[in-house]
Length: 116
Image (cartoon, rainbow, N blue to C red):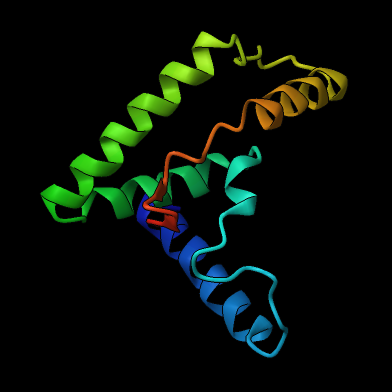
């Protein structure tokens, strides 16, 4: 299966999920960024889909997100939050607690709004 096909499957999955969830009231609202200070886990394929999206942005928007990503990366590594691939669930939980306490915003949170 080609890479493009995998990306299309991810996109189709989320489009269909959004359709199914349309009737459910969501706690997420424009301007609310509570969740944006929690660690978010994505699969490699989801990450690649986000990367593809970012590459299609106008250069000005891309530059803002790139600067935010750089700032996030510096904070993440400054506080030694990187873990080895063999990290245990307990290690992940401890790292997530520290991450939350530090109030490190998601790098895609731009002007209190999700940019992806």
